Image (cartoon, rainbow, N blue to C red; front, side):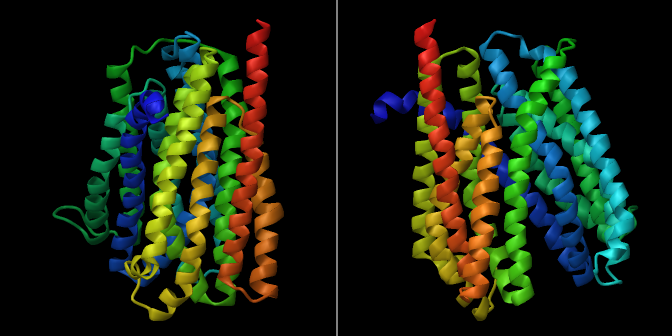
Amino acid sequence: MFKKNWFYIKDILHLACPVILGNLGFILIGVGDVIVAGRHSTNTLAAISIATAIINCIMTFGIGVLTSISPILSNYRGANKEPEKYFYPSLKFTAILSVLATIIILASIPFIDTLGFSQELNPIIKDYFFVTAFSTFGAYLHTMAKEFLQAFEIVVFPNILTVICIFVNLFLNIAFVFGFGPIPGMGAIGLAVATLTTRYIMGIVLFIYCYKKVKIKHHKDKNYYKDLIKVGVPSSLAILIEFVAFNSITVIMGRVDGIYAAAQNVVCTITTVSFMVPLAIANAAAVKVGFANGAKDLFSLRRYSYVAMGMSVAFMTASALVVAAFPGILISLFTKDLHLIEVGIPVMYILCFFQVFDGLQVTLAGIFRGLKQTGIVMIANFIAYWLVSIPLGCILALHFKFNLVGFWYGLIVSAIILCAIMFTNLMFKFNKLRQLQRGQ
């Protein structure tokens, strides 16, 4: 069985490995911001933490929509539709999304004073909002170019660029915050300037690389925009649904006791690192399944899907075993607070089970992106997180006093439901495609 699937495993790994590197790079860029902010002052760290939490909710929607570019163009490539023609339509779509996101971020600034934050933080948050709003196009341009290249299975350079920008961003943070040579120290606002500069460097470099690597052609196609909205919007909303759910747990438990919010933050950071692997496999599956779907190659479509799911489950099972073996040690990498470690260890044991299903669900979501059917992913996320996980978690955590552990019991149930809904729908989709193939 392993030998039979080795070709498909290698094919997915060829795409996934550089993407894993790039995903970790994005995390480390954010870590650099936190480190420099913390070194500047506690107020700076608190202000940018609040600001980025709000801004990310706004920007994530557009980025989620743009991640539909690679599976859609992979479908076109499989169907011999010359995906090179869709670079300029992608660029126009990106520009429109970035303008909308920028306007929303700027329009949010007057409401900051009404959100109940400390008065000494509000000016910092507002300044960070204002500068970061104009970095949106750079971030979206980078995502668009990266997705465009990924459709052609060009993944090494874009992800190496992300790793390089870890150090670029760190240097710019230090230079703009504390001053360096002729560059004056700008304090907290320097973090926003560094973010803006880094995002445009990443976006412009990849934009130029697209021109050199792919033969760009001019083309107009309204159906392409329809595909981007049809596939991208539900996919983006699914990401937001999950993102808001996890942040809601932090907020709810933070109102009970700050130690639970801190424990949730640490546990989520730990699982996010391991989550980057199935997320990369999901991206690779979206491209491979998209190509097979466009080429109407049902055999390869199914094989890539099953292999990707197996790879994600296998990795997350191994990750779960590591977490189960060293829960205290892993938490102690982030804190020396014994009370925090004590609170976090029971959650880590529950995390072991959650990780396996979480890896499976993100891979299933990638497969559905390749099939250009993301509506089911959005619906399944809403049912699993907001009709099951959060209500069940509130009952267990607040009524039965299970605290943070109660919410994680709810997350396990939601992850199982999420996988069951998507996997069942995938089987129905495969059966439908098989019947259509036989009828031709």
